[in-house]
Amino acid sequence: MTDPTPHAALRGAVDLSSLVQRPPQNGQATPPPGAGGDQVVFQTDDSGFGAALELSRTVPVVVAVWASWSEPSTGLVETLERLVRARGGRLVLAAADADRSPQLVQAFQVQSVPTVVAVVAGQPVPLFAGVQPDDVIDQVFDQLLELASQHGVTGQVPVSDETGADAEPQAPVEPPLPPLHQEAYDAIERGDFAAAASAYKTAIAQDPRDQMALAGLAQANLLGRLNGKTLESIRNTAAANPDDLDAQLAVADLDLSGGHVDDAFDRLLTMFPKLDADQKKLVRERLVELFEVVGTEDPRVAVARRRLTNLLF
Image 1 (tube, rainbow, N blue to C red):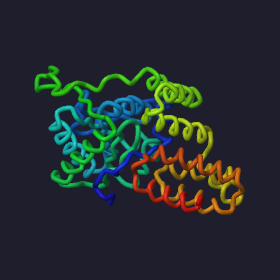
Image 2 (cartoon, one colour; image 1 turned 90 degrees about the vertical axis):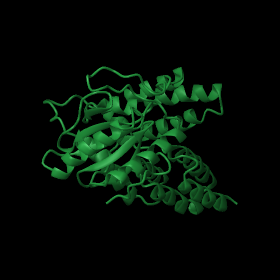
Image 3 (spheres, rainbow, N blue to C red; image 1 turned 135 degrees about the vertical axis):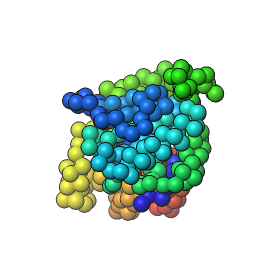
Image 4 (cartoon, rainbow, N blue to C red; image 1 turned 30 degrees about the vertical axis):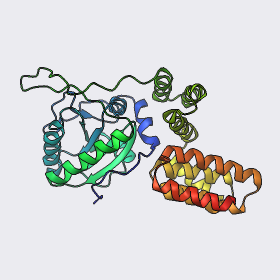
């Protein structure tokens, strides 16, 4: 069972952004128990996850991966709805039927149902698997809101009273993204990662201290490098060519996109002493970019940065 504690930093995952391009599936999703279908609690699947991904830039999205044949799943969704609604619109719940959402199952690396994750500012945050007591879930939600606040995700969606009328939100909804950030996000939605990178570069040129643009550029570059490639082809090429730097860079991208942060850093840092000056420069630049994707305050980044410094000097 996953430790029910949100990670201290957000992590990039290429699978999440790729889901916004999925074509609609035939058929209607089975309503999960307790899912009210409003702005606070709603259903999602592979084809509709783009809306939840966008919403996560305003308010943290709790994603419950459930299955109708799993009794623990149905009970947990009902519990999650009650606890999310108690947060007054500061969290939302998206219930995803695992049988109808294979891409979400893969993206979140779901091993069993029920599994609960979150998405904050477009980035996945593992929460827990299996049924948890109410007090544990409440503690996880407290930590999730704290993490979201650290990343500027402090909005609130309108909540409905028992008659279905919208109540006044307790705090203002997060303002829209800056124009260049919105341009970049729209480009990512349509799969144009080069255009997204260009928009972020323009934002950085206008304000070199724009940390969100720096992180966004690193994420767009990562998505662009992985676009159109398969896990099998990347790993097979790297295994067959252990001394090929491009192949190892690609598998490091893949590892990091899947949350295997330490593996990605270790792969490149282990190769580093054997490289020539030009190759070392390339690896150093790639590591700096991957540090931005993970989050420069992440302790794994601090460890890798110290290791890189020791190798350089």
